[in-house]
Length: 353
Image (cartoon, rainbow, N blue to C red; front, side, top):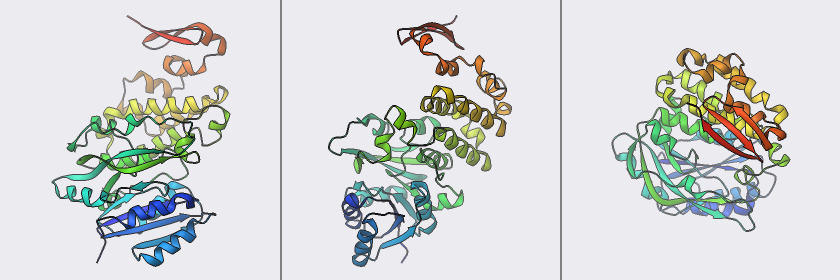
């Protein structure tokens, strides 16, 4: 009998946490699941743990591959999934034992393409980073149409949601490999071709914040932060998303949020880059505008037009990232809609008439 749910667990050097993760999945009150563990080239004892569990529970399928990153491992899981529905669990996290029994039946409701449960943050000892729990708070309850406004108020994490495998297969929705922030384009692609989501406020997913995890590094500042990932990844993920949007002719549906999201990704990239290299983010932005001919869809958008022509000096919001130390201490900057006054590092915006 085919499984109802495929649970994909990417595994890379998480032997310290893997037992707790696997115990939380194999002991689910809902039993008709397959557990696809993708060993992404682990060099610790993770594979030994997986083999031990697979001997005791035949629902566990181990796929070993060369290290290719989280997206690559998840994509392998999607390709091998046999369930009607699919979900993801990171191998250093764990879930409540009634998670799937309490969640799956909501798919029986009309037009529900996504079930979204809440998240509990679990902090490992001696963690300096403070995670903002408000990011994971649900803004809605129950059955909600996946409009642009609703999606904008959801976290984009892959692991606190259950998806229809048929939708992933139909639209060939995958994670962008080799990039950080990979959850964003995956989730937004899925949301664009889905109807409604059911919001469950119970905290079924336990998300571990630990010193060695990717998320614990994302908020660090200074030189070490710049070395942990490619600084253009926010823009590369946005480009990946646009390829999906235009492939499936979803540009009209995506149009209301396109420019704002694009600007957000530009600023993320600019903040990550050292000042001398920030022109790389602007050049990539110009490439994206021209590649997808965005000025054709937004003929009156001053921001996109300036990017397309490389008139970066005309975009005040962008130019503030190029302020010198002296200008940050004392100076006046002419932005598009504001004058920006810098005094001893404090920025004051004065709206133009």
